[in-house]
Structure formats: C-alpha cells, structure tokens
Image 1 (cartoon, rainbow, N blue to C red):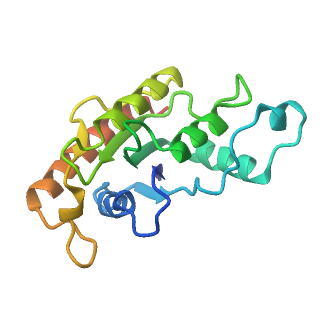
Image 2: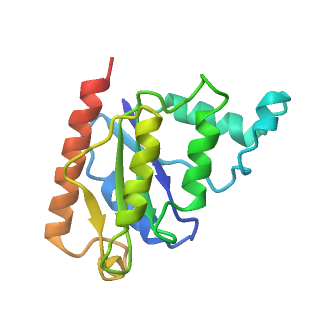
Length: 184
C-alpha cells in the first residue's frame, strides 16, 4: 500500500483546504491510501529542543508519521501572499535535526486555493521554494491553483463542477506517476 500524507494549511474545522483534500483523496487509484496528518498541534520549532535532547512528543510523533509516508500532498490557502505558518512550521519540524530530514526525496504535490481570483498563487510558489530546498521532487504540471473556492462545493462538501473533478483526477494521475518514479 502506497501511503500519501496530506498536510493542510488551514486549521479551520470546515476549511476549504480540508474539503478539497477530502475530495481529492478519493481520486487515488487502488493500492494508494491518502490520509490527513495533523499539524496544528506542533509547537513552534525551536532548535533548543533538539540540541538539548528535550524533543516534544508531538515532534517525534509527526516525524515518525511523515517518515512512514511515501509521498506528501499539500493543500493550502494563501495568507498574506505566502504559506500559512502551520505549513512552514511543519516543514521546519520535519527538516530537523540537521541531516535527519523526514522530507528528503519524498515526492510532493501542491494544491493552493483562495476565495479570490489569485487562487493562492503566492502560497503555492513560496511552498515550492521550500520543497526544492528540502529535496522533494514536486509535480510541475498541471499546477493546481483553485480560485473562487467558496463556490466549488455543494451542501455536502462535494465538488459540484465535473470539469474540476476531472482536473483533480488528472492532477492525481500525474502525482501517482511521480510517486512511482521515486519508489524503490
């Protein structure tokens, strides 16, 4: 079973990112399991925790969980033209201590979204910069910028537009191809 970890950039219980993730998770083929990984409980990264051998349990649990994943899907809104702090903190926690990054070599994909027309473009590209540094191969095309997200779902949280569902299916297919390329 290939395991896909999904990290959400919004902590809101009814977030658009969570709704997108729930819809996209169903599009992976048989043999793939996508699951949301909690990142809202991670204390802000502080190197002293690692240096003084006083690592919070939440860090250890998170690092172990990410280590078990075959690939990572990020679904995020844009905050102030960048990545939400919760995503950046999870990247920092997982990349430390130096030389023990849990991200190294894991295939990744990014879906950014916004209620506006810019569709999280800034967050998507800032996140890409970090993932390149962390040595994570990233889905390049198709890019997934979802604008006007508030109109995307029906009353049950399902994507209403079949064209959007087809787009996400093609996005998942490319992501699966990338994952296969990097599996041992």
